[in-house]
Length: 305
Image 1 (cartoon, rainbow, N blue to C red):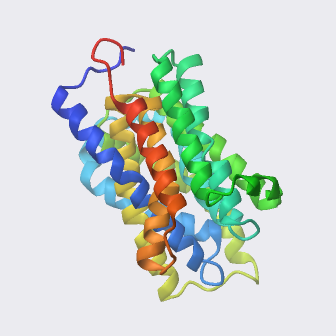
Image 2: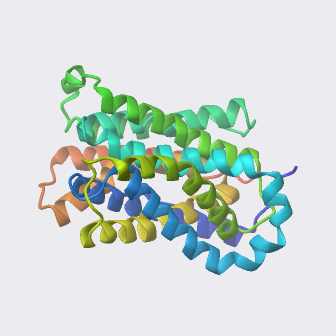
Image 3: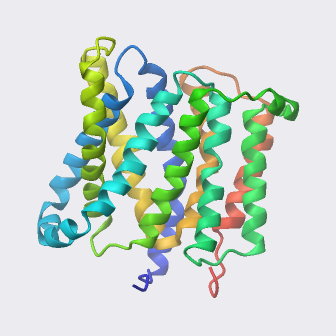
């Protein structure tokens, strides 16, 4: 099925909005720090995506009903997409935070854009120029520079723990989520498509959440837990995933994926503004590398990209 060609105006909007996605996802980082002792990983993921899916369904109910036969025929696709994007990239990240440090999480998760770029070239046959390859190298270098605070010798201090393996799975799952959506273009709008994926994700997460709720060690769901569910559903949920999915349709998987490198930079700013953590010179150097790399990948050549 040939990909739809979008207008120049749509491409410009996508290029602007995609910069917002990493910032929205930093909300999930703040929430994950508050989750232990408040709500268990799978229960938080279930509440997040059940609420997000309900909101999206309200706005796309007519379209979903119109395409109900297609949705049923492709139900395994939506279960797989929901499992990758909502369960593994949701609950597994919360699980990882219980046993690994943010440096390890950032380093490992930053590999997902590289996996997406490689998959886009090898599997989806997307164009990826030498200029864009250098952009990936620059952006990845900036990510590492921020994470190690300019002290590259710190890389030798990274030790794998169980949480690191959860993040390895999440990085691979995010690459699969992005590539499969590009591989399986939908006739539905981005809103209806995401609503269907949320439903698939909820069905996958449900048995794991029920198992957690049956455990004696699972915190009861209180006001704080509900607040985290609402927060993660609206910002890093509905808004971030909708923008990412729509921009990927417009710009392509590899060009959109590279903006994930902005995550550590945005996180540093949020930590400074919300958690009063200081900003250092390494943030400036890393930020320049990241932004330069993102620009190299995302600036299109009209005839080829």
